[in-house]
Image (cartoon, rainbow, N blue to C red; front, side, top):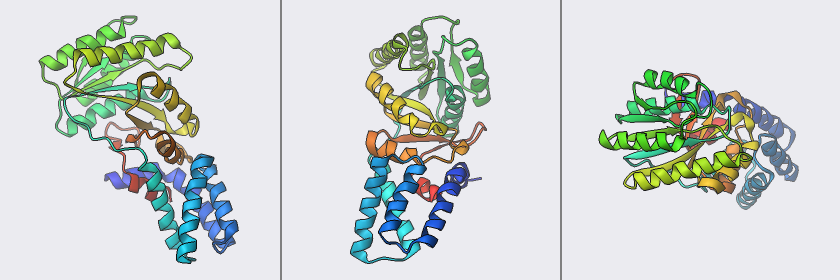
Length: 298
């Protein structure tokens, strides 16, 4: 199964929800003013924020009036263009090597699974990978990560539960530099923004990377559970303020009918989606493609 069909499959619930509503909307209204008002409500119901939905519909209405268009398929294609334009507000990331990728986020978003998939993705791309098990806070976190490291056939640097996470990062950097590893992926403990000590811990780990490995490209990616919809926006804001985010990894996209929040997230926060989890398997992670995403939800 190719990337295109994997992403389409993951977006099926979102597409089914929006697509059916769009079909009914076209049957009900002949692309007049009521159509645009209801289209805005439809987008909001798919977890696109009110501000972004209004922007999309206003732009679409202006184009359709200028071009005196009444054709359904043409309107849908222009709507896709408006959605891609919103996604384009977040600048694309191209990963350079050697790379250090720190994966952060709240509890329960699937960070451990994502790191295993990410490691396998880079291995399939011909890169050498080391994982740093810096979640020393959660019991058995390191053991779970070791299972994924074995599946992906990559090295892992770990320490005892309760150890200083920054010390694990330091050791992993030393190992990655010595072995000239292409990609070092750092796991971190899930944390809420209310846990100030854990947020400070993240900042400390970031400082260690910047000080000990200045020649590497350092990326801070937040793992977001797509089923949380618009609630994910507040998570991005808090972590971006704390350490500065470079990108987003979407997990559980196949489990939600409200994947539209991605559109407003990119448009309003300017943080790009870099990777998308498309299923439960080791190889079920892909780079994010804006055009395919727009096609997939409409």
